[in-house]
Length: 166
Image (tube, rainbow, N blue to C red; front, side, top):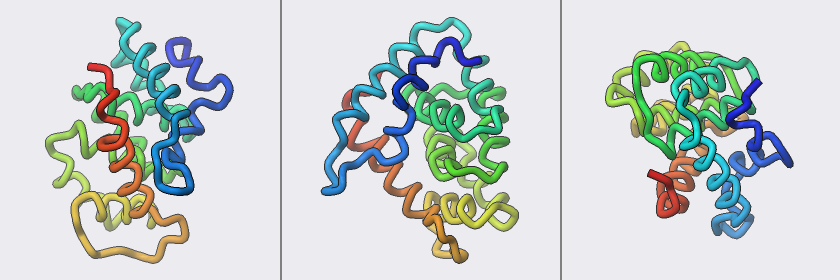
């Protein structure tokens, strides 16, 4: 179903993106390997927009996570990708905080779109969006959407950015 990104689903590579730090707060070397595979395959396809839209339109969080990682890495942005990304964020998902981070990196209208969604979003998504736009207005959230978003943003855009493919 995802021929270009099939290697991301082998040996659970995509799972490394859920928790990019080791218990001591250091970058996980396995994440570097998974990012290298994602980068290689993102740059090997002539249909990246369509491939990303397919990953993001899936109801399963696993392909959504891979799509979010690739968006952060490539900074690819166009109307189709933004529509697919925001549609994925609007669906309650395990990875809505990670998708919110991707949107914050590629959508120049992120802040306005985040503000319009916070009240209608699930608690996890609302808290992730609020944290990314520096709002203190949070709701009870057992999943810690804000913490996930802030940790993931730091990991993907600070700890791992020096090895990002361009």
